[in-house]
Image 1 (tube, rainbow, N blue to C red):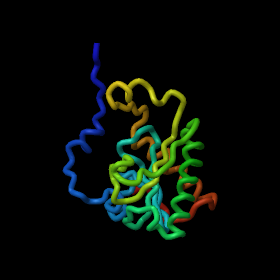
Image 2: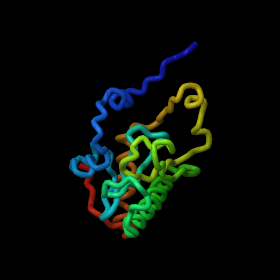
Image 3: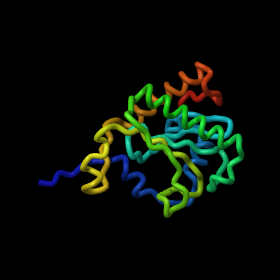
Length: 175
């Protein structure tokens, strides 16, 4: 017997008009960090949660400047992207205790980039057995934690790293 799986968070994306605007640039200028799931703003780069994650805690690190090619990044921007990737991994280890990670860029549509116009590094926490039968059967992922709850957990981790002097950047009160 087949049972439907309810994933109401996906309908907004499915039905939304794709107007060609950059979700990363829009999130940076909106001022609603919590609403956009923007966790951290640095001098040259920022961290945002994936709204349609592969796993809970799926983060993306992107340069503040709208750029699509890795080789177009200035050295200081590349460095900050990597430092923030390290910070993401530290926070995810502390707050969510994954057993491993996938981290990387999808460069170009053929490589799987759904947003190819604004370069971004994916940081995906992994647990034993997280690739269960659901994606194999019907391209379905089951998320055991609400995005807002994950945001609160990880936002606190960025504030802890800032307080410890391990990262700098703008204070993000989550609003």
